[in-house]
Amino acid sequence: MGLRTTITERQRRLGFELKQLREQAGLAAGEAADRIGMGRVRLSQIETAKTTILTARLRDLCHIYGCTDRAYIESLVALSESTGKGWWSAYKKHLGPGPLNLAELEAGAVSLRMHESMFIPGLFQTADYARAIFNSPKLGFENIEEALRFRMERQQILTADNPPSVHAVVHEAALHMRFGGTQVVREQLLRLIELARMPNVTIQVYPFSAQAYAALTGNFAHVVPSTPQLGTVVLEQALGFSYLGGPDPLQKYAALFDRLAENALAPIDVSLAPEARSVKDSLALIQHLLYTL
Image (cartoon, rainbow, N blue to C red):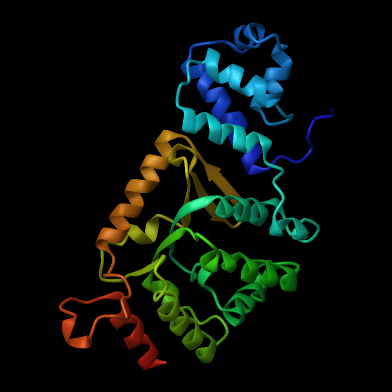
């Protein structure tokens, strides 16, 4: 079998995890390969996600590395055996690997925690709001209609069977951005209130009056699968997507999100009567912005 020319984030992560296990066991690549009757070059190709690994060989590696966490091992097997095919596969000819990897990660998530400073999160955007972003000339989006259909299809995860819990902290600056004009912004703000009615969705606004560090963190999404240590932090930047895994980044961004949520306004909660709102909250701020439009 030839070496891969395109590597998905799922494949890269499997190789990364196997390399981390080997290094934690204190084994050189050649020594680990010898123990299971595999060439050192072959093991290196597996760790760099350039080729596949048979399930039996994967289990053998976990055994010689001293890994006894059955749930974790089975999750590695699932990563290895997955075909990577899903609804996003239809967009391979039209979109780059970044959004496709994100969709695959989201499909396996039990929890999504997001921070956005300038945009409404993609999972929450109306079609008109998303189209206005894609049409912004300086942002350089191509294949606008395909990108729009892809974004709308991504949102189906919110209403799927056993949907993930989704918690977003959105900076107040994003609510003031006039993508598409007043009516588009108004419909987008109303959409946030509508989504907050869903039991698996939590939306908080980080106000200008809160601690300033939120504006400096940048946008990120912490995608948490059923095995949390295989979670991924996704950073969307002007030049593409970056993916962070491993204990240190996951702990750092989990703690960062906790601080953001702690300092943000209370979540949108349409079930509370006006007289029951004893503190400023996200709903009140959105309603104020709606009034000023």
